[in-house]
Length: 312
Image (tube, rainbow, N blue to C red; front, side, top):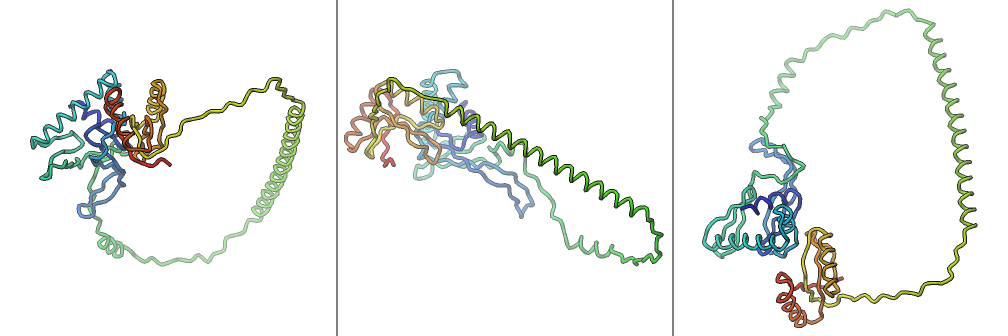
């Protein structure tokens, strides 16, 4: 299945990849660790899990399929629907469905989807090329005993003979100290002169700017009228969602599209999964929201859904 390859590609780049109508793959970072039982060193990695509750289309997978297969967005969505229908059918028939390099899907006795990730697969790009390795345990006690046995005390010999002094070295040292003091003093004087020059030039520049500001005059002969905008507010806890998008630029495109159709859309703040949800409208009454949702699903967007949440 070609879509599994596309999902693999996205898992290396994103922490959440949603398959619309089926569920979402989530990844989390795991630090490097050592298995003390097997003396195995494991590099940092990204662990994959599956969440059946996240099924709303965020546009990430569909846009990627459309760009790689060079097809329209709607065609890409239809390919995803066919894929999820095939996977669901195989699971209902009692088959195990394998996503290569990701994991295995199956149904338990309660007909709930179970996911078993592939253990050896690492989706962390920062760990590319790193693999596990085994290092033999070092017996430090044996090493300490060997070190003690090899340690031999040697006698310390003191040389009591006095070396003849060299008086010319004393004068050479005095000369070096004097030259250093002269050089340091010259450097200090030079730095002081540079600072004074820079301060004077900065004062000249500030004075020039102040004079130019004082000489400038602004005359408005025909003041513009005050423009008042009455922007529609989204109130109520029942919202019709047009889509949830991983990329904010896709959410902005959807906003422009809805404005052209006469709606007053609203973009919610990014959720904890990094999704930007775009709303058709919001309602105080659940009944009104349901009527509008059925109308939109029948005429415009079959994937629209209702969100019950208070917008702060």
